[in-house]
Image (cartoon, rainbow, N blue to C red; front, side):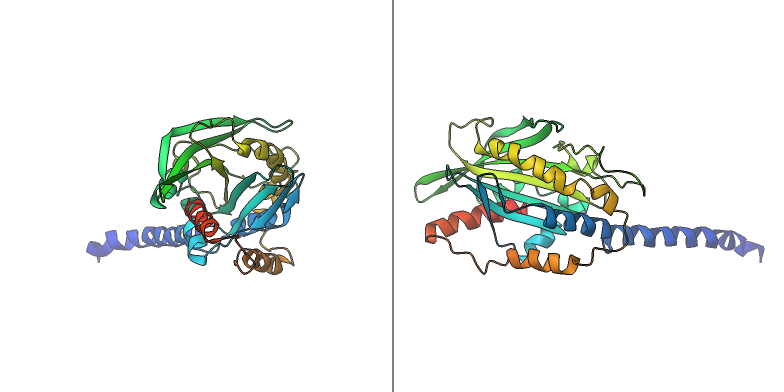
Length: 279
């Protein structure tokens, strides 16, 4: 009997470790309620129109959404009614394991673009908000003897769960773009990622893009929309209209109502969208 004693002693330890492993795997791969709660805020808080900007949703394929890890997502082109300038946004929330990856310097290159120069950093200052720190890079696409350039800015925000009864008024939403997002945001259930993309030129500097003008108007809207993320992350139930909201999200990005002007425009849009979504 004594020869089996070490194994008998180990049984409770193994049981505890097995239980913890099950809990951890469920935490990583199971249903992600915190991200769903944040996705609801994202879908209900970001308007299609504000100021002089009017948005149109892009198609998002289901496999692309899964690859990006997006529980909530907005893929939208905003056009300025006065200047006709355009800025695309890719705004998602989901588990860190995917949302922290797939950055433009990888995905744009995989989509056929060439990165022009090194990745830079740009601070975006908005009154009454913390300085937003975005990474940025320019990408070149050669086709039919012509060149097209895209400028992309990207950053993340990690909401922290707040205790019941805590106010979200003092929450500081600080967009950052660390060199290794997987380490910086490791093991969080809900992580936001935000891209701004616009047409660029060979000589345009990172500080000259229309994306920055757009961002200064958009970031206060995003701040208001997702400010309560830390509060809703701890809830067990979604709002009563959540199913309808998520169905509308999918319908908006189904592509059924897209009517591009011509074949060339369609190809340009599809390549840019594919790169943004994969990123």
